[in-house]
Image 1: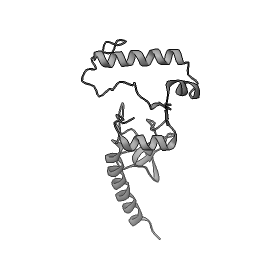
Image 2 (image 1 turned 180 degrees about the vertical axis):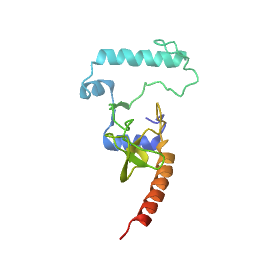
Image 3 (image 1 turned 90 degrees about the vertical axis):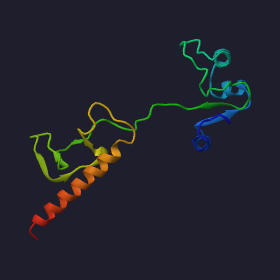
Image 4 (image 1 turned 90 degrees about the horizontal axis):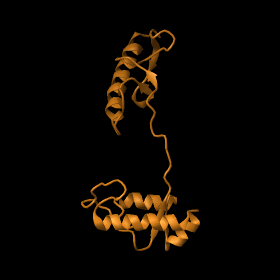
Length: 155
């Protein structure tokens, strides 16, 4: 537990019960509904690999890694499950941040989109936090376009 790379994240995971410490492998296996024999075998192989500096299953050099042997309690289980944090999609926009209609591929008057609600900016993939420049740039463009539009509307 002390080797956990991010102590603040560890505390959040412990608080949310996503990371659950146990005093023994037997307790961990019982409460996490795991078969103890394969758990011990996997942990034994892991500890031998750490000592040898080489992953025996994949042949990877791990001598310089931050991995530590897991021989002393507490032992911990962590919930890992898929999570949707981003979808590659949204409303198609043009360079003026105007939403494009799916019906006729023309701008929808008065509808502007910025940030992750828009599509067509990232290309094939997206890197984490790369939407911030998009949000700022198209947010400013949308604001400028809205101001222009407001000046042209007759009250």
